[in-house]
Image (tube, protein in one colour):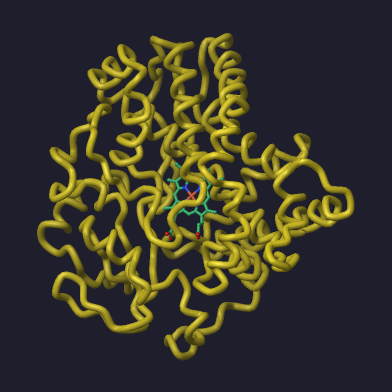
Length: 389
Ligand code: HEM
């Protein structure tokens, strides 16, 4: 978990498609296979639209997990067409590149304020003081979560994400269920208040959405808001932390970027490739498939190794090298196919604005200690990165 990239190199070379006994999943290590399977409709993030748990040989979800699954399966990420198509269409209007581009000045202002305070204090923990508050503030403002309640979002979100790790402990499962129950209760109250008294925010818009007579049910509305609030910051925090740590460990690339801020858009893509924030996504096999000559039967689960795909020498020249000016960079960090990250344009703006603000205001920023890493494998990121400016 601490150094997955060497293991990935070996997997891609020796066993790019193979059953991993400890989790019962088929590991998929090559970029071409990961990319193709993400787009292949014979696989799904869920199988419940075509089969029951029993038909796929799984026990029903434990009763205590019900509040968690009710929220998660009401958002677009954990459903497949036709429900996915309908939900994504209703929400995507708020995330077109044009709508999101209009948010840039606001994102730049929030990033500027956070970075100015950070620099005035002489530095501190980059994660807690810049990386986290920026995307949390942006998505909370977009949705219209009152400022006084925003401190609740990150702990709820972190507990919910605990369920996405490999073999979560029973404590982690209970924490996820509790967070899902509290978070959805909170958002339900907010959504009802906004339906009665709409504001200029995304929760109001979603509460009132009418698309050819189509509406979000209350459950879908809450599931969508939970998803947006979680997905809307978790990975962005980790790209910021992993990204700066990658630059500190590659001083010549950091100098290159400091000398030419025009490289920033390419550098952000490269940082997302080089130390991938979300290492793995899973899919259920809905019909028998064959991958690289290996047969995988219906009912199996594949683990798509994004971190490995992003270091595949078949696709990236000199993949272990961090190159902030890399031009041909089809990294897979935002996914592909129908679940391709809805927030990718927003994430890119947030990252360019926060890295840009730090490069300008803290041109000599440097770490003062080894960072601490979070415990997860799937969600890969730092919990603290102490720097001085
Ligand atoms: C650098 C930051 C981000 C990364 C690396 C990232 C990555 C991803 C990936 C890999 C997926 C697809 C998962 C799959 O196929 O199983 C996804 C989906 C999604 N992301 Fe992001 N994301 C980021 C930021 C954001 C932001 C800022 C938002 C919203 C404001 C967002 C909202 C979503 C949503 C709603 C989906 C579900 C799309 C669907 O199921 O159709 N993400 N993201």
